[in-house]
Image 1 (tube, rainbow, N blue to C red):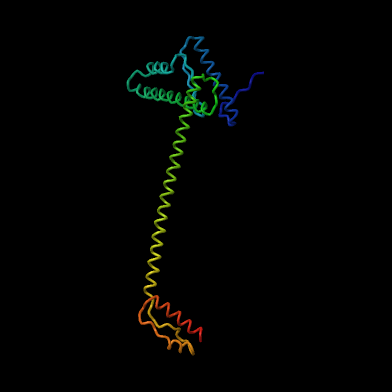
Image 2: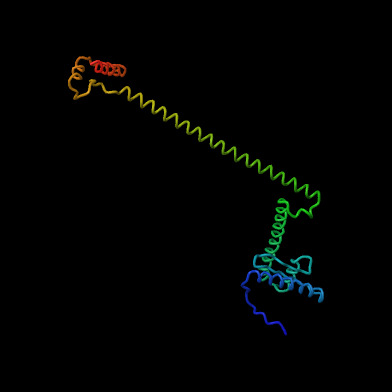
Length: 228
């Protein structure tokens, strides 16, 4: 009994879709290789996954040679070849960036202590030196940030001290003005009766508006009331 016909539509299940992509991708690459060997054909195959990963196969040493041959075979006029040249240039730039990204990813894994098996003793020593340089740079940056924060806190502290000094000076000036501008008036509660009025008449009033004399006069008046 033969296999049922597979309906060609997008596989909704994510895991099944990934499994099917991997199987058919490998089968397509295998068929391209078999075609190039059996028929002595120049084959170039480029596959991009849904995540943007590149899978390629080329019988020549460089994919660019096959693409250049394709361009020269199909685009003879200069006007038609211009877009193809732009695409080839972009593809070369992509390959460079892809190689750079793979190198940086490998270096990052090595720095994290992963995939160290293939490295030789010399490469491990070089990696150790790079890590030490990175640590020194990190420490230097951290110390500089701490110093900047310390200077900023000292600057704010100085500002607060200056504001505190100004407030104290204003309070002292205000207190001095209040003492010097005390009203010169007769001492003795208005509306008092009896002995208080008599004591107020007997005590002399200060002739000069002096704060110290004013305070002494109040004290004498209070002593007189206590004695009565």
